[in-house]
Amino acid sequence: MFDPGEIMAHLTQFTVIRIIIILLLFWGGLRGLQWFLPWLTEQIPSRFRLYVLPLMPILQLLLVIVALMRIVPLVIDPTPENVLAISGAVAITIGFAFQDYVSSLIAGIVAIYERPYRIGDWVRIGDAYGEVIGLGFRAIQLVTPDDTVVLIPHKLMWDNIIYNDNSGQREHQCVADFYLQSEHDAEIVRQKLRQVALTSPYLQLDRPISVIVIEKPWGTHYRLKAYPIDGRDQFKFTSDMTVRGKAALARLGVKPAGAPVSVAV
Image (cartoon, rainbow, N blue to C red; front, side, top):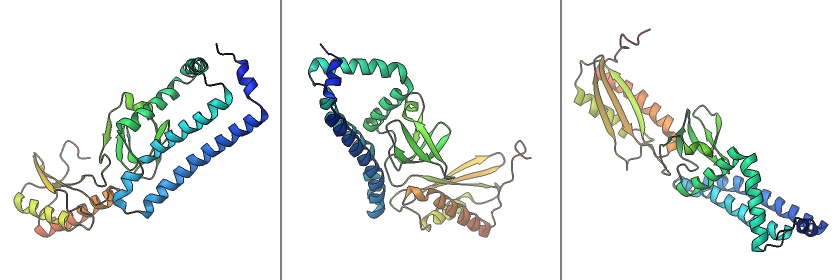
């Protein structure tokens, strides 16, 4: 049977020093990973970026396992009875005291396996949208288009829909919207907008370009859809297509539609 006195018997001054050294090495390893992998992605071709960054949470979890495997034998005699007793006591204590935290930790481990989001992905969770820049044990970090960092607990994945724009790919679809008056040749406008996308310096030529035409009571809505080479350029790409698209349509003499009466100020 497990005897709590065994722990105190094992905790000599030398043992405590060894545990402190292991914890310091563990902390240094985590900090080193958080610095090294982002630095490495800046040195290698960008096409490998989304393959390297997702290794972060896996390597962090391995560090935790190694640290525990080194510390536990220093504290108790790792017999099956002792390990079972300690595990049960810790599970009950943590379960009551840190329910939300443990829920996020478990969700984080599940996320490593299911991969609903990875570092470098552009995701929408609730009201937050941005690029995943960090995957911790408890939460993920997003940086939004206006450069705001948002911390989102992993536990939200249990009951929230997660929208992932690129799912581990370098590029993802961008959309430029154009609202025009109905008096124009739709086929000419479609071809012109397609040329606008084809001549963009940000375009990924291997992915399809599409122009969706939707007729509305107030005019015609065009949606120009294409993919940038790098998803991080999505806003530059969308702006480039919008600016040059408006200029091309103006040269055709096509007029933009006004706001519908129901939404006019």
